[in-house]
Image (cartoon, rainbow, N blue to C red):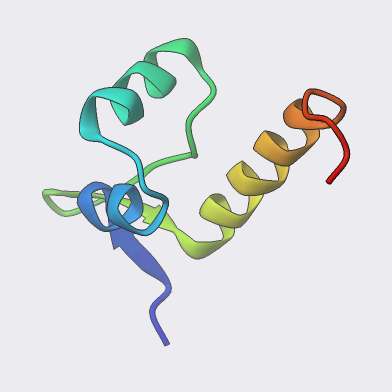
Length: 65
């Protein structure tokens, strides 16, 4: 089981480009990051928290399916 992923892995798994990821980080809406040695990682918990926040912010913005 993987407990953390690189920024590239996070972007790939969430269909985000690096520019979008860095823009979200600057705006404060990206996932929490952690530094381990020289690597900057996103924990699986942080990714899950970020997805929940994005879902909450999106509620009511789309017509019912």
